[in-house]
Figure 1 (cartoon, rainbow, N blue to C red):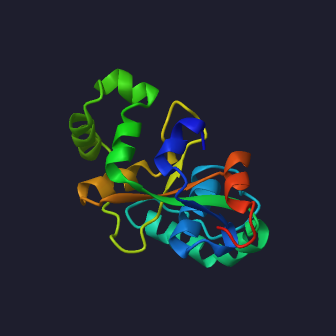
Figure 2 (cartoon, rainbow, N blue to C red):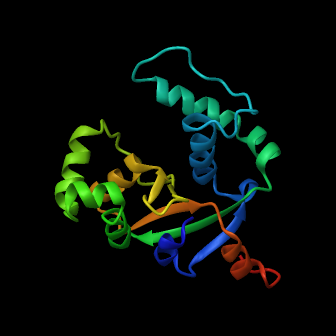
Length: 180
């Protein structure tokens, strides 16, 4: 997570190894690392060989079935976990370089455009997957934009987030035994 995003989570976060993350958090991280990206390619899971509306659900099922394999391989990898007020996230998003240039800080106009053009699924209210905070200053999220906009449409007061902790996060939370 970039220092620009530190103000979003403040001191209200936990450092948690992958194997201890709640299942929705494991799914979001594994999806980002193994499906959207190529960082966790060494864990095999069932990938549907068809396109269509059921592909995402089939892919999620394959990923979910492989969670024990991801936990075995990446279980000790540490992540930051937080819940951030939606209004603070909206303000951060509108400071992202590209969005600030294109939308002049007009959240409502940007959000309406995104919701109408992104083929955005409705994400469930329970077991919400977190959004992945970016490591770059120029953007708020590395992954989870559809989820974020879906949560905003639903009127959620907070946005669950996960991030790659920097040394400053580890030092702040792991200095004393038992602190998470």
